[in-house]
Image 1 (cartoon, helix red, strand yellow):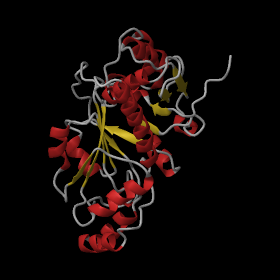
Image 2: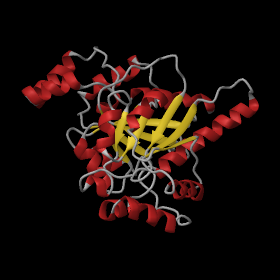
Image 3: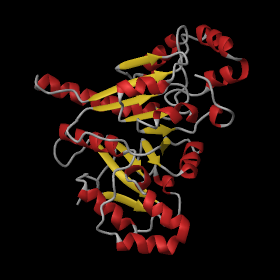
Image 4: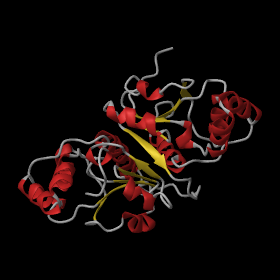
Length: 315
C-alpha cells in the first residue's frame, strides 16, 4: 500500500480541548488527579463529548472535502493530544458520534504534541493549553489558543466565515512595535513612509494562503456548476484605519493572498462587528480584543509579538 501523503493538503492539528468541551473532565483532573481522570474517561467512554470552541470551524472546513475526488481530501484534521492512548478513546468515539471524518491522531501522555507539526505538515494547531500554544509560537509554528465557551451552531449552515486580525497574525509585529514604543502618530507616519514595503509574514499568513487554495477550488466548481453556492468567506478585522490601511492591502497583494472583506476600524470595539459578521473563527494577537469577541464568537489568541511581551493596546 503506498504511503498517504500530506503534501498539497490543508493539514490542521487539533487538541481535544479545542474540538470538545472538556470542562467536566478537566475539573476531575484538577480536583482528583491524573489517575481519577483516566478512570473518569473510561467510565464515560460512550458518553459523547459536547462540541467545543473550534467545532463549528472544523466541521465546516472538513465539509469542503466534497470539492475533491473521494480518497484524496483537500483538508486533513489530525488530533494532537496530551492524553494517553487509553483515555484518548473517548475523544475518538466522540469524533465518530459527531460524524466528523477524522481518522488520524497522536496521543502523547502528558507531553507537548505540537513538536510533530512540521513532520505532519500542519498549517495550524489549535489548543486550549496556553503553555503548548506559547511554546509552539515561540518555535516559529502557527498555533493559537481557543478562548471562551462553545457558541450555538446551526447544523444546516454550510457557509464558513473566517476572520483575521492583521498585525501579529497575518503580518509580523514590526509596525506594532513602533506603535508601542512611539505612539499612534508615529505609527501612522511609519506606515505612510513604508507604504510600498510589504510587511514580513506573520504566523498565519501561510494558513490564509491554504484557505485561498480552497476558495480557488470553490470558484472552479462554480465555473462547472452555476448553482453551486460559495461557502468560504474571509475577512480581516483590524484596528488600523486610514492612512495605515494602504500598506496592509498592498502587503496582502504582494504575498499573493486575498480576503473578501476588510474592516479598518480605527480602535472601534471589534466585538460589535463580530456580532454582525458572525465568523466561525476569529484570530487575534491581543487578548484585550478577544475578551469581548469570545463571548459570542469562537475566538483564538495568537500569542505572537510585542503585545504578548508587554501590555497590549495597539493596532
